Length: 250
Image (cartoon, rainbow, N blue to C red; front, side, top):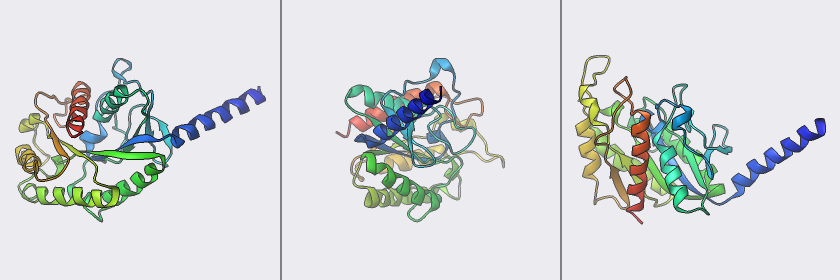
């Protein structure tokens, strides 16, 4: 029995190191909770993680079973799973490596150059680069900045952030998703409305001005009961749309 356990442990370690040694197509996942994913996970809606890996909190490669992110206990289904599945299915010889860095409830100030989350994302991306090539950056954020005070300043910070990521990690495609229109009826704890249109307008304002940049539409997508986070079905669709946007750059 002991010998069998030793063999199994060796096989497990070998499989893990083999996955990390493979040349993978890497994607950096950044933003807040709607990138991290808050969709409900059930057996019927889980996505096959064959040839898809994720960089865990310790910087080790693991099979990319959801939740991909680990920012909070509420992490669940996310758009990255269907995005990665689509990219893997297009090329049977490719292995996908996801680099989860999104953190729920975060403002863009933490994502600009020198911010703690920017620094963490760059560090984790450089760790992942030992195992492959960065193909793109996927972004979804803005809900925490969609206020009268912060929204007008968001767009300039967003552009600066993209430039800083590219200086550190290379001129890779940058794909950003719209905020959901369902936020029209959402109110914050202090009763203020979420200025989702303002953020979306700034997202679209950079089209044609930033190279290899795409905005993913969120039209028709629906939320969880909290009316703040995309539900699982919508996240699956959103991930497919991210893949389509990425492909449009090639």
